[in-house]
Length: 353
Image (tube, rainbow, N blue to C red):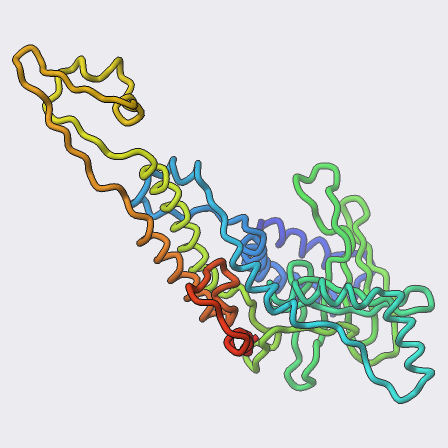
């Protein structure tokens, strides 16, 4: 995939009509997009619950782990628990004429719904991006996730110096997966539309007089070192999720093993196997053990039935760890307390969010 992206970066940067300085920007931005794409797609898999069991090869055979393949949606819950508390509430403006124009722009772009979509992308990947383009006389506001956008930050101006978004992707003839077909390069003075025409790319310049890049980040937890923020699906969240998925697999195996009692017949005659049906002794209503030809009878020993409590307790501990990392109440992860919480306790647990 990295090799494909490097080849794609070269193709886009060599688009016909693209200025040399802008070609260098395209290469730099495509490099940023390529470097972060793998980690962004990994977090997308955790959000969607597409992560399989990472078996340690100790508690269960690898073949059994693949058959069970449980899922845990805790990363999704970590994202939505905060997203549900952020709502686009509108704007304030003293000028009625300007306020009317803003309302029209918001309604035509369905900004309230678009905000919700971009917010989820921000919390998943650390950052979502807004762009403004000319829609033939009216502004078009678009949102892009980090999986389809990249930007260069200018510390001096505290703003984006240049940005790139994958505006359209298609599965072209000869391709095995969807590839970018329309890419937008946003600079201080123009929007460069890069379009794939067969096997080559063509650049079209659309200049503007805004004097700034028409791209804004919506970052979660931005810092001076990380101006584009950090993801809610952190390394700790992914690690705890891996542990929880593995514990779910162990619990499935344990539940199957606990279904039938572990009964052992020591010193049996070989004909006691009942034609190889090992479940006869455990499923029969009345069981009888006879003596063998030598007059000896087997010894019956039954092991203690497996207890599920230690397994569920460990899953509870993992949920508590997830709660500590994400500031999401532990009850959101399917772990309930024995005693019902008071209204004050519930409000206090939600305070960090």
